[in-house]
Length: 344
Ligand code: F6P
Image (cartoon, rainbow, N blue to C red; front, side, top):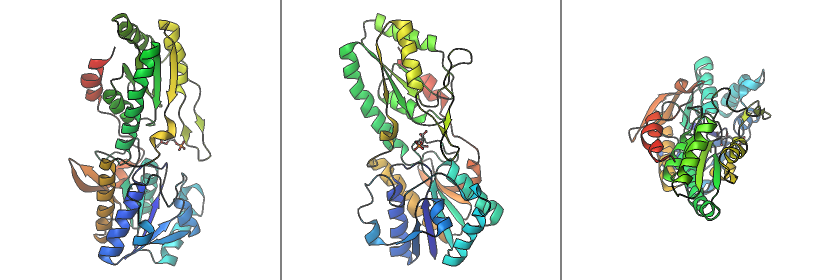
């Protein structure tokens, strides 16, 4: 078979490992041809690609980022975009396209299949872990480890100065990274988008902790966290060139508020794209590899419109349509029953 592959949306650790697994299984085991499209949908529209083989993917397993490049944007952004995708399928005689992406890319892939009958298979990726239908996305565990390592380091400098460190992590409208890294790093408080916070209550937690003789607090805040209505005003979110909301900077609002209410000095640490860069953890390498192999099987089974997912430890398939317009949010029990026990 002739299989196209693209990586879409924000990059994340493990993308190259998926590309390697797809290539090794498709080319070496099945005798397929694999074309890797550059720069997400742009490469499909413009027919820019590379033929992937064992030597091209050699050494990719531990390498962060994506050798194919990635972008936001979709064929639906222009009036002739879908026709150009169809033309690429016809010109290159593609039997299938594997889309490795997050909610945005999977929604687009699903629409191309549902509305235009294109043979597309999805592979869910993102550090945000917010894709409905799978228990986990690859990249997430690496981001959590990076954030946890950072929090560990911040404890000692915060203790030395008796400071409040406000650590902002990514995750968009889901608090997965904040929650997991916050629990693993022993956070004083964790603020997530799913539960609007009260800055006064957060400040009291910090105050209580210090009054009990503990020095230093690490408050972990997800970039998409929101205050309770009427308690704090956040600056309006900016849009990038694709109309995608740019989050970030909430820590700069929260830190001075905590200082003003408690009298403790505060500092802001925004982990930003460090969470997305570099080598994937062993967990993410294994998940990426399993997803890549399963995607090739899904192509051969003609399970078009499906994406490969992790369910209770097993790799399964579900329709990509479950992702459309959805965000998989955190398990609130983990916040209330586990994380909150250690607040303050
Ligand atoms: O979706 C992944 C993600 O890293 C989010 O956590 C974050 O809000 C966003 O991408 C950042 O996007 P960009 O790479 O465009 O700055």
